[in-house]
Each structure stands twice: as C-alpha cells, then as structure tokens.
Length: 520
Ligand code: SRM
Ligand code: SF4
Image (tube, rainbow, N blue to C red; front, side, top):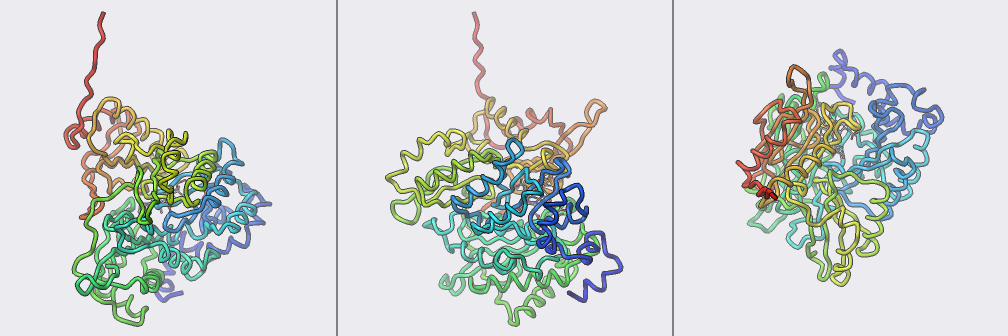
C-alpha cells in the first residue's frame, strides 16, 4: 500500500484500523468456520463489517437474518440465475424477500449464516457473485438497461461493464488490489442519449461523446459525484475523453489513485470528491495520467446526452426486427420467491431468458417476438407488475428504510406505496411525477434526482417526536441533469399527504378529482 496510507496511520479511524489488521476479503476463506460457529459466536468485526466484502450484511434490525447484496453487472441476469436467487430466499419463508436496488442490482433478505457455504456454491455455479459489494469497495457497476436492444443507442455498454467488474473483482473471485479503498466508489457507463444511469451521481462516469466531427466514438469522463449525509455533489467533468477500449484501464488508474491517495482520516470526508478538492482537478488528472503512462485527450466539446430520461416501462420495439422488450413496474422494487420464479419462467417462455433491472427498481424482459407479445401481455403477473401503472406509482422509488436498515429514521417502502395510492385516489395527473423516498440523509433512494424527494427525519408535533420528511425538489434527470435541493424541512409523515397534494397541484398540473356526492 501507499505512502499516504502510511502517513495517516497515526490518525486511523476504527474502520481503517480493522482493515489494516485484516483485509475484509480474508473472510472469504472463513465462511465454513462462520457457518459452524453461528452468528452469535462470531467475532463482531468479522460479522458486522468484514462479511460485507462478501456482500453479506449483518442487520441489527433483524439479527441472525442477514442481507446479501449481489453484483449484477449492467443489471442483466439470466432466468436461471434469477431462479437460483429465488430458491435462496424461498427457504426463508416469510423472512425471505429480494429488493431491486437503485444501482440496478438485487439484495436478498433473510440469509442465515449456516447456509452461506451452500448459497455461495450455488451462486458460483451460475456465474453470480456478491463479492466486494459493500463497505470500502466499488459498488455494482451500472450500464444502459436497454444496451444492445435500443435502436438509438450510441454504445452497447454490456461488455465494458462486465470487463470492469472482472478487473476489479478478479472475475468474481475477489481482488485484494481493490479491497481497501478509502470508502465506497460508484461507477456508471451511459450508452444512450438519455443518461439512464444517472451518470452525474457517480464517483466515476462515462458519457457518450464523439470526436472528430462525429466520426470517432468515445466517452467524456465525469468524476466526484456522490451523496452522503454530510455533502452531496454532482460529478464534474475531468476534461478527458477516452475510447471504449481505454475505459477499463482508466477505471483501474482512477481507482489506484483513489486507493493510494484518497483521504482516510475522516470517513465523512473520504469520498473521491474530497481528494479532488484537496488536490485540484489538474493534479488529480495528471496523477491518473501517470498511472496510465500516457496523456489523456481533452474532453469532446459536447456529450451526446440530449434526451429526456426514459423509464422503460411498457412495450418497446427492439433494434432486432420482430423483437420487443417489456418493462414491468415492480412496486418499490420488492420481490418474493414466487414472483422471481414467475419472472424467470416468463422470460424463458416468451423471451430469451434474459432479465434486466433498472435504477428505478423495475424489470425488463427482453427478446419477446411479435408473435408471442399479445399472449405475454395477458399473463396474470402483469396485473401486479403492470406495464401501465398509474402516474405516481410508475415513477416511485424507495430505499430500504426502517424495516431492515438501522440507519433509517422512518419506514419508507410501505409508506411510499400507500402515499401514492392515496394521492392517486384524489388527484388526476397528466404525466408521471418522480417521487423518491429515502429513509435518512445517506440518500440511497436518491431524493436529489427526483421531482419530489422525501428524506426521512425526526420532527416534532404537538410536543412529541414523530417520523417526518425533508422535501427536496427540482432534481432533473436525462439531459441537463442537475440535483434537486431541500425546499421544506420537518414535515410530519402524518401531515404529508396534504402537503404533497398541494405540491402536485401547484407544480405538476395535478387536478382534484371531482367528488360526487350521492344524496337521497
Ligand atoms: Fe446506500 C449505506 C442501501 C444505494 C449512499 N445503503 C447503505 C446501507 C448498506 C446501510 C446499512 O448497512 O444498513 C443500506 C443497506 C440497507 C438494506 O438493508 O438494504 C443501503 N443503498 C442501499 C440500497 C439497497 C437502497 C435501495 O433500496 O435501493 C442501494 C443499494 C445499491 C447497490 O446495489 O449497491 C443503495 N446508497 C445508494 C446510493 C444510490 C446510488 O448509488 O446511486 C447512495 C448515494 C450515492 C452515493 O453513494 O454517492 C447510497 N448508502 C449510502 C451511504 C452514504 C455514503 C457516504 O459517502 O456517506 C451509506 C452510508 C455509508 O456508506 O456509510 C449507505
Ligand atoms: Fe438505510 Fe438511509 Fe440508505 Fe435508506 S437512505 S437504505 S434508511 S442508509
């Protein structure tokens, strides 16, 4: 490791200390031991922290029932893989469920430590991995959810995303080169014109851009985007343009610079942007060039993000003649084993077995021939996972919240769903309004990208502390993406419906439904 890491040793925080004592990935070799010991007898640092290097999260809210965060590169998996994930949660009955995450990924719930060896074997057998998906590692790498299907795409991101994941996880086996970053790290690659990955909120993002009068394709690079309780920033241009072939080595170079020089003393100031602040963009850029062993080309004058963001819900023609992809709305991303088996079988019976996930926590089934489409659309599952949901439901996103997350200040997913249903019952809307819920200032539910973002807080009402939200507005996605800001603080959740009703009427063209009074 690094000169910076050595010089900061005097001020190591508890996380840096335990990482220095034993690398998180070391627990990979101890899974059998943990399984026979049981969660209560395990070393607490291994259990509560290091297991996250294997994607396994101790949940203080549900002790003994762990969460497992997968890696699903570009959000694409096979029906066979989905079935294996379904079987994993099925064995936990009512405790078992799965969530599609805001990083195009899947988290499994109810996991028992004694089952881990078997689960990891099963995942391995179908080419799935959960390695390095938590703590100070690179999170699931997002790519265009309709990569390879979209007639209008500029670049098919699938292979690149997989190559980056393979580089940083050693093809899913774990790669100690990148298991001790100063903090988490997010990477995204946009392949279309609508920025479907929210490039601007990633530590490192690649957005399509042409050079030489639209003749040579590549990516402009954005760096330093992140949300945290302390600070939220949109990514800034690095003033660099790379060809697709250079993306993996640039990811490696940026990660090496961050690993070796990122700030480690204060975890609240460890994300990449803090290093960029300290160094200035020029020095940061030149350190990346040193690692690459060559100069970076300046950014293309403009990037190609010039569309409004699509949500992919509904039926769409693919670029392959005669084939369609269909986006199903999964309410707040929550799935149960039966749903997952059903989705897998629909993807096989009607499509090619491919299933895709979106950062809006929904699912796309691809490669459905025209001849099978009408029958597919009559399937019962589409009543629950609609292709044409109501306009608030359609764009609803929610983080995990208090049901499983000990950071949460409020319950989110159930409340979010109940709230949009109540608002839809009283309002007529003309277009979707993107409402994002997040249970605490960590912002996993990305309230800053929403039309209306709701961030959990505690507030006072009638002399009592109650669950409430801070309201964010103005988040813009797609072209000209920018972050929303906090407009109102501390609205008690029990008063929220009327506040949202008013916001929707005043800012989003909603109208009250006529109330018909029946007399006599
Ligand atoms: Fe997150 C921590 C859930 C996307 C910012 N996040 C957590 C933990 C692990 C906290 C914990 O141990 O309980 C949550 C797990 C709860 C659980 O049981 O599910 C958690 N984050 C999630 C997910 C599942 C929300 C969701 O419902 O979709 C998302 C999983 C993504 C994935 O597949 O890897 C998730 N988290 C995000 C995002 C959004 C994104 O990446 O686009 C952010 C903001 C963007 C960013 O990171 O810059 C985000 N999560 C955080 C933070 C604040 C990071 C910071 O620098 O301070 C924390 C707290 C931390 O890391 O210390 C956090
Ligand atoms: Fe948990 Fe807070 Fe993230 Fe929601 S935003 S999942 S409550 S850490």
